[in-house]
Length: 133
Length: 336
Image (cartoon, rainbow over all chains, first blue to last red; front, side, top):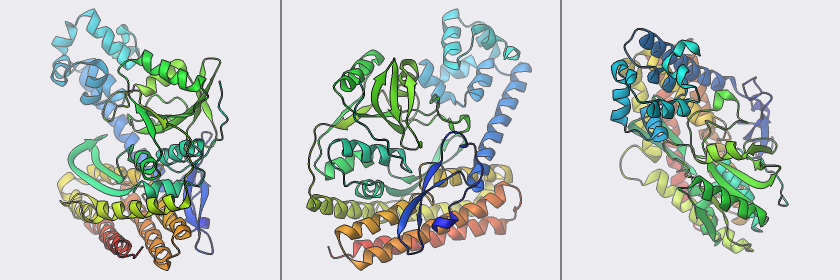
């Protein structure tokens, strides 16, 4: 990449920082330049976020339909998967899978609910009722 | 307490922390490209079956932590590295270092990193920052990918130091144990061994998923993505590949440009014309990685969608694999 080709496209880094890129100058020597962003990767990040939003919407529909517990919704909302949720809560993955069943979730103890609520940064009321968000 | 400190922006966090911590220890000659090259930072791997954020697990650089470890070792700098099971002890240890005027590196998770834009906050735990002081219950932070210094509260820092999941930092803290002087001869040795180790990593790891063969392996996979995954999922996969390759921290072209810069700096220590020629090959490779990204963007933005378009991406990767194979073979033949 030539120094004058370092892209300066708008991106969500605006107001936060510019990123350092390596490029060669006219004499072929490596130098650095700051970039505001590159549309190729801004749109790659958009693709990732659209997928996340889709997963959240699907999880929400499933919860409201009684197919799964609110844990799935909040897990997607916080960009987690079962492994990450397991690491934060200390529950085994299979335990979390059980808690994803609405019948099991409805009988969870206050202590367990509190652990999930703290992990998701929400109140227990919100954990039980996703429409409160 | 606030140490005498100068913020250095870098393309990649671990390179930046390495440059800064070694500078604190009195080793001023190490630049970002030198840290990256001595630490044999350039890599490629596609780990099949493992999924990250529901996409393929691909890396363009070596394992997190290795660049600092290898570079300080190669320069003969003793390092302190600690992890903690207790948050309280982790904080006490950090406070004690800062009270003594120390500047330290910390491994952190990005998800709760308040000064990052929301769009970049995923559960990624191998980010590195420098803590250089404490004022009014706020830790003074130098994050090498940011243009300027920033700060985090007690709670905010504890949260990112104890992020959970893959590569959990466990409060990891590291710094050079004592100040040293490093002679140019030592740097020459380090440059040479860094290059040799990188040749090994890119050409001689058995199996077909790492190094140059990993790039070919990915090229084969991409050809099949459209049929095997469907168009929508293939878009996600291509976008993930591009993010790993270009996202903040790579310096562009999947770290290939930084490596090109390293070889030019290596020439200052070993005036061999081959180094300059091989540097150009890495520039070429970085350019091709970016051409492949532009082509991929055509697909994930929905402008391109045919099998032929996927083949074009794939063919870029075959070409890249060939160039990097030649480049590392040429490096392996240098008579030092």
